[in-house]
Length: 456
Ligand SMILES: Cc1ncc(COP(=O)(O)O)c(C=O)c1O
Image 1 (cartoon, rainbow, N blue to C red):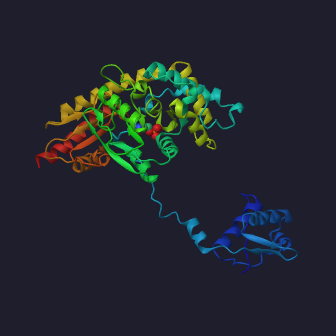
Image 2: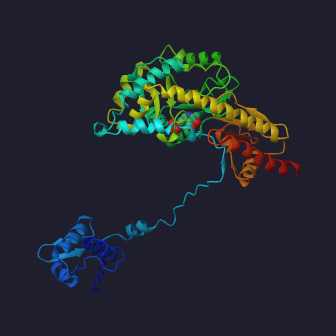
Image 3: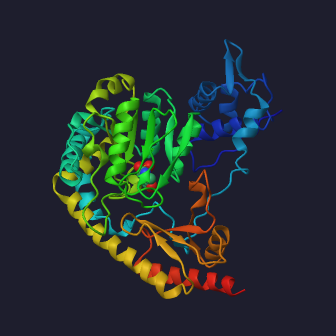
């Protein structure tokens, strides 16, 4: 086939030659082992310096589109058909469309508008400099580890050394690492419980036992598990606070069984009634608790910074296990977070957010009482960023979510968080993201949609 190359003036010449030959090869207009025009001849034909053609051929060769034979020239390489098809086949990928007009009561969201962007920007500009170009140590930036240890001491009564603090990029990475460190041992997870914890267990193909939750919190496992994942300060999703009796029972169980407890303290900063709930780690005198914390609720989920506090007795083995790990958390973000904490901004930001979320929680509950005529029940309203609503008679979870959605309001299902007995009459409402106005309007929309259904 005669190769036709058309040059325009708005792009480098060598790039145009490279792209047009590449296209001809991919479209099979130039077949495998066909000879490309001699460099000199093509240069003359295009009225170009031979260097432009030389550069295009070299680029094609370095990417494997052609090969050269001494004193004979350049020839088209053999390329598998499937590769070409895959390269262009993006039509099957589903586009993710974000609906901007929906009122979002989905859990796991925070009030991003209240984030102190100005302070953060100032610190970011300071920290983004040439001395920060290398990666952080896999354990995390020491300055952040120090600040976390200090914060936990004064805010959660948990004493640890910075050397016991490990920085990860969120729950999943951290939990996966810990499960692997425990050699994929059998694990117990709360039922109902955090879907992402169960999902990691499935991905790792762990033997995973659902452990019931009662009014005192996570029950003592009867199954032979080496690890237990639990959320004592604010059970996810029910909001139950683990009783002191159950805490002691669990610690005794772990000690006797040579087992370990993962305490996920994901949102304990936001408690609206009474004093903060102490951590399980605080009571742990035998080094049985691995503490999980996160900045996803207190700062921004998009920061992707979480932390683990390892019992001192496991620290050396954990270091050995992870010796070749590379930090997956931006060093600059870690340093900015550390500075933010060091300057006292973190504690004041949490105090501000606690006041805001308390007001939103109240607004949500008042709106529900105002607009939902039928009897319903609210569960878990003393802390955190979500509540569970037990639906009025005649509505089930599926119907309630569909009706809310069709009126422009997104809410969460509760049944997928259960394994043993799935309730079908509860929904979850997160109030982190919506504004007060949106909360009131959203509840009114939901109530109207539900009422129509109830009166049918
Ligand atoms: C139960 C629970 N644990 C932990 C987290 C923190 O997850 P991550 O650190 O991946 O943002 C969340 C956040 O939604 C959560 O709901």
